[in-house]
Length: 132
Image (tube, rainbow, N blue to C red; front, side, top):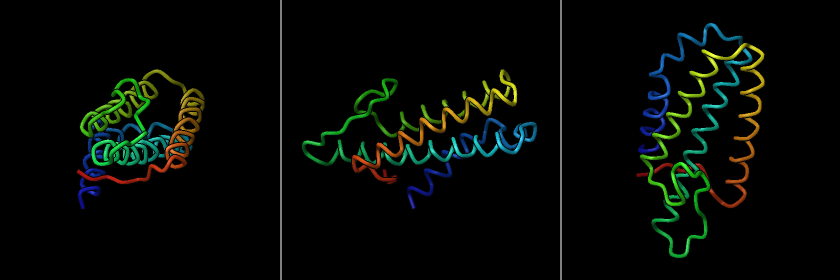
């Protein structure tokens, strides 16, 4: 139940930037790419929470966060804030400063990077797991 609440809060925070109204101006492909970007971020959050749990509860956990913004041993609130801000910032920049083609190229590249990140996290044993 806690993971569901976390996802709802995360999506609500991302949605508070009035994404649903403004995405009407985007073409269907770019809208789908943005939703994919958001979903990949949610999966990455779950995997990072799994990493944090490993660091907090397992002796000798050999994994650490590589995102220099949150540090090697982040806390869950920091992850949520950084991810929420990055989703909002990405949306804001793409909506206000990019053409349809620019959105497509940027979101395609970003999504490929996130797919690799999620895959690499999965390969070392991190799973989608959210708990407090």
